[in-house]
Image (tube, rainbow, N blue to C red; front, side, top):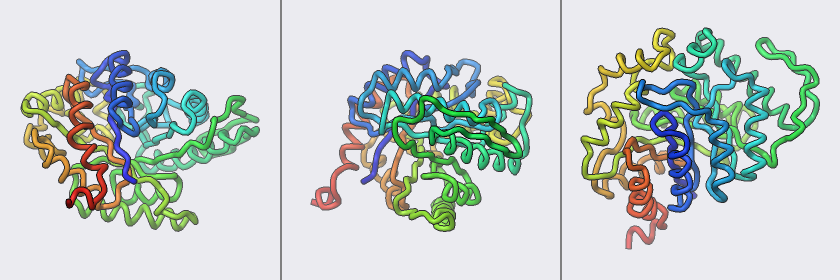
Length: 336
């Protein structure tokens, strides 16, 4: 059964307000939330609270909704042992609801915080080591790890996870999707690209999973989708450009873009039309239903909706009522 999530935009909203929205997302029936983990926001006017503190607060203020970072980088400004400990602690407050989303990071966060930004191939190798170490520590046993990048000496999590924590790996290209299948418990990506790309990514993900002896049919495939559902589409797009334009520029891989101001300058090349093409921007529920169903038909199991609207309460309530409720109906009911 497809699950539906809400993107908690920690780059746009102060942590207390975002926590209130998280509680409202649960009340509205969302199945999970994914919160950004940034050291710096995309915009100088943005926010950048510490995600792991926020997740602890969200865990105790909710009781049903799944939660985790979408995604965190465990290889540079964080040591993987600390991420293992952080996720384990959140799971104590939210057993059976906690997941860990991992990615290879952005210069905006990593280079800015520690002055290092290796090439992708090194970051990928670091990621594989980090995953191995995190899983070992989650066992609750002593771990002496001798990796190329990370070492521990009889390290132990004396407060291990309350239960098994699924580990979802971020991928934007097919090669990374194969790694997600091989090393992770699921795939985490973003929407707005051509159908052929996702078909290739999912194929590579499945191949990676099978190579590791896993059944890909049982592995979640999460995708974050940009949506705006209101009458004032232009205003919503302006909010997207104000807080999130940096997501459209090569800050993921470019050392030169490592401050919000640099992100803003590069983001000026992003047009409203580009934002519209990256997701579904419509005041009509039918358009959103069609948009979401194409990803369900591709094989994604978890759809996470991200709106840049300032009034998140209105978005949460309307989207849950008009879109998600319809998506949950069986095919036979939809056809009737």
